[in-house]
Amino acid sequence: MRHPVEPFRIKTVERIKLPDREEREKILREAKYNLFKIPSEKVFIDLLTDSGTGALSQEQWGAIMVADEAYAGPRSWFKLKDAIYEFSGFDDPIPVHQGRAAEKIIASIYLYEGAKVLSNTLFDTTRANFEKVGAIIYDIPIKEAYTLEENHPFKGNIDLEKLEDILRRENVALVVMVMTNNTGGGQPVDLDNLISAYEICKRYNVPLIIDACRISENSYFVKKRNPKYSNWEVKDIIKESFKYCDGAFMSAKKDGLSNMGGFLFLKDPEKNLRAKELLILWEGFIHYGGLSGRDIESFAVGLLESRDERYLEYRVGQVEYLTRKLKEIGWDVMLPPGGHAAYVEVSRALKHIPKENFPAHSLAVEMYREGAVRVVEVGSLMFKDKAKFEFVRFAIPRRTYTQSHLDYVIDVAARIYEKRESLRGYKIIYEPPYLRHFLAELEMV
Ligand SMILES: Cc1ncc(COP(=O)(O)O)c(C=O)c1O
Image (cartoon, rainbow, N blue to C red; front, side):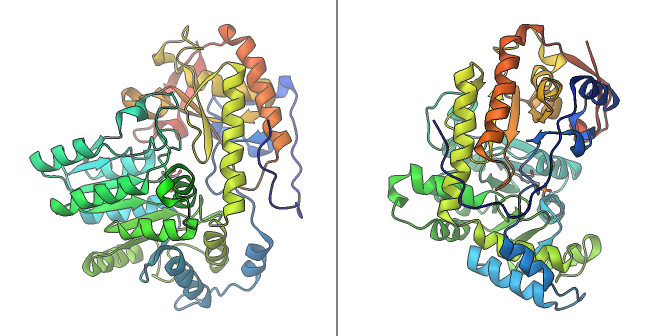
């Protein structure tokens, strides 16, 4: 089994080094077993995240060279504005330096102490930003989302019955559709599900916002998994999706194919203006939003490149390849494969490690110890008692690694599976009040 051939050739290379076993052990100790604290130079294959870690195209590098760094009215901003219009159909976007800056603005506009938010499953930064202003979050994905089996093509869907039922009974401030659902395994949302959710929200006069950071991958899945859209072009599915919302935000570090950037827009002109006011307070002027002209140029080009269907075929094909190979080894994985990462669920394989000792983190640490591969825990360490799964996420940076890199990762995961009973748990010795996994310090038990 192979994944679709990489639809590019490599023009610039970055050397990667494999530290020896003794050094890896020392690095883990020094990082207090928090993989975010390991210098990337000490990582051989870095699957920590697909956010901002992809390779740029020659067109993006070319655009960077002609960036306009003016504070107000830079040429680069108008290029991005046009690209966002071409991508989403919306003509008054607001730039931000990354997704969470948009989340903070949206939280200030729509939310307040006790405000209720419904979602197909909010991402951790969105959740933290919303909870910071006192909002209460309810994740209501379809029931299949909480199973690992290949039992639904769109496990990112929101439960429409629950949505309607809650909207009928309660005062809800906001509904957010995350496309694809990162926390739930990179699972896509069907366009038909989005359309129905939007119609329900309209009936109850509740705004629906799209978290669009992986909307190109999501739209590729819509084309492939919903026969109704099989003759559509991905770019048209993307645009169609943006019709069914009251606003959207996007971290360009994912399907913007950029190292930095993002945007938001709110279709209500009053609210969009409020967002611009807050942008100036927190991020910068409305023509750069915390980004350099160089970032903006790279984003403008990357955003449109992300719609290339050969690229998307290879991209989701890579994720499928990694996911199915990890399953073949014996690990439980989230199926069907999602859009940006393979998700290994360790509850069965590492059942000797209790939840309080973070079994998925144990595998994540072991991936580094065994082969200098960096992955991330998405389980009890990240979400505390709200975790539905003990996942290890193997996120694939865009256009960065080849099939043989993935084969190396698969070999490391196979060696660990063989000795899984020897893995040990961890306990926290320091944790910050928000998003604890980023700064936590741990020790082995
Ligand atoms: C679904 C989702 N929403 C929002 C964000 C936040 O974006 P950023 O990291 O650019 O702040 C992320 C980042 O990983 C994400 O995956």
